[in-house]
Image 1: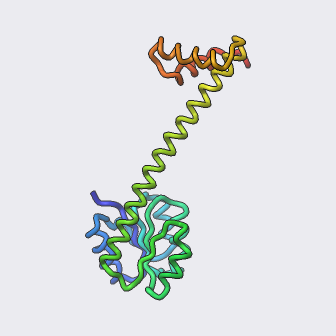
Image 2: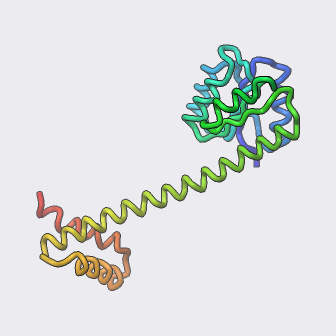
Length: 193
């Protein structure tokens, strides 16, 4: 499966070389631009798996663009800089998830950098999925707790009794506690209006 890549480079000879290296590593270069304005337009309109910035680019050195893309998107960002600047630039962009690769490019190092980007994206995807699951669980708990509160308020029962009531209804009716809670809300919320 090929992953989508955006390549930002002002040097046309580099575009062919970088496109080849990306394709060797299962990336398809979907778009090539030479300046940050166009790069940001494409990043905002299209989901890319990776953005490779061959600095300097037409309107800047590429560092600010890498930081912005790293901060605002989930795509991997690889920034190519001259070897003598790689250490300094790397310290400034690491907090944004940007991988710095020194130029001239070592094919093996470039390939490893792409592997790091893929691994980070898989990790991020897993964390994102877990985050969504936790948000959903929290929302369910809020609804169930609201239903327990209403039962306590209108039936003058304890929290433990309300909890057991919801569990028993769910078991007897073979539906989730969340659905029982929603039914309770539909029943009692109208009384509050």
